[in-house]
Image 1 (cartoon, rainbow, N blue to C red):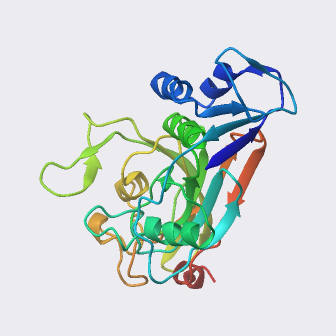
Image 2: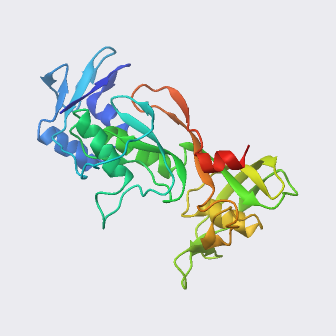
Length: 284
């Protein structure tokens, strides 16, 4: 399957591929196997491309997840390189033990129904109970690009959560290291853990809980849940981290928006996903 990339400026083929942070070994393999074409002709690493040219990569792939039998995905944005989905709560991104019951299986079903013969590539994860935006990459360049910029935290993600208690400070920074709990299957505040920084801002206070907008400077496992619990504002429905189970039966956390520079079009994009009914009802 050919993936085509429009060229917008004068640049060598190698420099273009490296701008996506594709590994040197992968670039070497692509040239070795003649997988790269420029305007439908074979090309060398140092050949110069100009505005209006089209670089193509021939990707011989197939679906690597079983197609789901039922269910559909809520697509927020799609083009030849990206598929961005609003994930429902209580579904895994992928499941190594049960490979036919995950978001990847639903994406596989969508690809199959639309004649897309590519591997399923998710750029990041959300906990099973968390809803909201998930980015899937359709090709190796886009995947390498997002892997790099998510690791450097230059992909900005905003979350909305519902937490217990009212706040003394309506906005602030939570800065505690996070490590794995040696006694339980969860994370904890730890002086020997990894740096973790969370920014929060109160949206609205209700009688028994508060809605909060959260931004992450780092992306540690369970970071929002651990940090909010540390400052005495555990997420509603978060049984693992002492959350109030009265109002909702899952962690009240939603990945609300994502902002990034499109890897191919070089345009700034902000995508937003509507909240699921359980959180929406609590915020009425």
